[in-house]
Length: 544
Image (cartoon, rainbow, N blue to C red):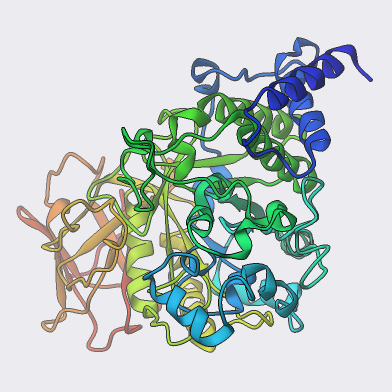
């Protein structure tokens, strides 16, 4: 063994052992120590020609790659043991241990007390008997997606892959399948980019309330799944700890994880990098807790360097202020921006409204609302990562299938205004504004009008093409593009032709002092949103 790695292993094990007797330790500490040591040694080794070091200044060399900026649309998958109870939302694994929560009451009424039937007892019921990764990918390709991001490990602590850090995973229990590995193979076979998401950070406190009353969380035999089960809150002056959630916008007010947990988090995260070589890596919001900073910097440097050696161009996402803006790619959960962002970004949302994972009696968004959101997001230099939640047997709900197929049908006609585009000088115009605090969760569903227009251009600046996507069909069969008034500073030359995607003939138009007026046919080409393709410069006599 390399001396540097051996010394690092000893240091990691020593730091883990130095924790208080009651402190949580990883299920397989030797494996964690070995992997963390490898990461630290690799990040400090100049012989590999590493481009990145675990500092913000070094990580600022990161650039969001062109493949991601071209792709625009990806599929997110929340699927795990929580799809078995299928109640409330994907937080069931935590909420079933929170007295007073609807999931707590439902669980006792349906399955019995948590001492007799805990979350672990759903694992044998998670059989995935109809899971067919190739059928899933066929659907995602038809939907027009260009990248796929399954949840590799949700907050419940049950990895959906073959992990060396725990026995509690989908390869050894439940479906007895490496779900992430199978999806990676099917994804790459179709030429899509592959990513993973990790929500492991939140596991530090996920089952903590289960220690406040009799439950199977307290059984040491289950520590590999439920541990650490620490409280969310800092203790008060009397040493008491509240079971209430602290302010989610101020993670410094939460109980910080210990070093053993941070090492376990780093080990699991980099294990995913080395096993599946993801093009894309998504972290949930709790990596913003200040104690994660050193481990997060180590992870980012390792991920970027390993990707560079494989000639990959990775995307790493963060939320809120977890990382400096120039070191990774911003992700906004169920939210949006109200203006164009110069740096690329992403929003992630779900077809289902109440839960990311499958639950019974959920409600679902329409294809139009999601296509409108895709159009709005792309015009502001963003991507849309759209989530589905399969049932526990591996089937995708019909409501989600139908929406995906409708999105794909629209993109087959209008996708040139989405894929491989870049923002125009102005993202758009119209009366509909983003909600107050648009980056907050659940502020991403909006209705638009025929006056709401979003602009994009091909990434090739020599194309002399501009797209205007109009989010409604005007009753008077004409649309006015105010930003394109005669003499505007955004176009180097005048508009000389206008076409309607999905229609066969060019459109009559006039470029006036107050805008470009375009006359439309009597019948719209689709019922969702329509795209005007405009060419500028000399393209023959224009039609009026």
